[in-house]
Length: 127
Image (cartoon, rainbow, N blue to C red; front, side, top):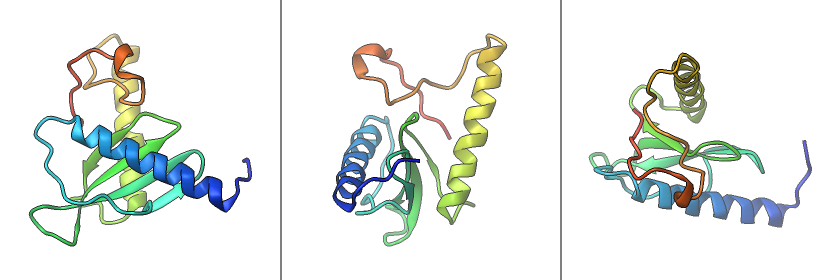
């Protein structure tokens, strides 16, 4: 693991937060409140989990988003009150999608971290 300075960590987290905001804004029908100012959990410069405020329950987490050196994704916080549970959900979901892709079956979407010019226009949100 590489060591990074406090300033590099702060810059990396700010970049990840911006990417999460852009990713969530691109998801049709997704309504949410504020994105946490700092990740709920992270290992910079590799992965970060962000708490996203619920509109239905202001002040509480309604969604989790993941960003870093991996595909961007989000999930409901229902039944996942801790960021580690969200991380587990993302890992399990991606493992299932990889198994489908390995069999040649259709998957639910494509990584959001690729530049939009390299993605098709029909991004499908994951649950």
